[in-house]
Image (cartoon, rainbow, N blue to C red; front, side, top):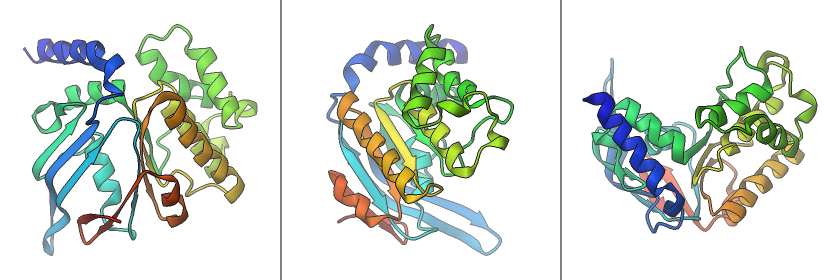
Length: 245
């Protein structure tokens, strides 16, 4: 039964994906809270967060380290679940889906640029970018991945493994991988945190180009307040509460 349900979810995802980008509601959070138990007691990371992101909208989330920004992104992508409240991702309530169902939804809709890269060490740069395309049975995975690596200035490192790349180079490969399936939603956690200012500026330009070219909704977690001026909407996360600024 679980496998049949997963197949049904995947079929539904495939059916509605071509129309979903223009949806008025890409993400909808209602009264989302996240608590964790520690030796010192219960800690509230997020408290009654409400958020709506529309198709093609660009959103910045700023806040101090430890304010819960990465936790929020993880929950929006279905990598983590709230303690209370509800999150809808493209009209699917994440809290009622299994881990496999959330993974299928994420694979179809979401590109994620992690602060820690999460490249597969046994795969070359090209193979890391190809992987999401191959999961989707894209017959042109090699050509698309090579094109994206060229676009982020990494074509000369196609056949290098992550351990031989600098932090900035790994970040560029991770960004190319996030772009690979032209996702309708792109989540970026400090996407320029490991890049020099010149490369970081180019990567930010690339993020916004994808937003404009593909109608991709973009959510950026950043410490760079100057970046917020390029976004349609900006929020500050402070003491677990999300406030529009």
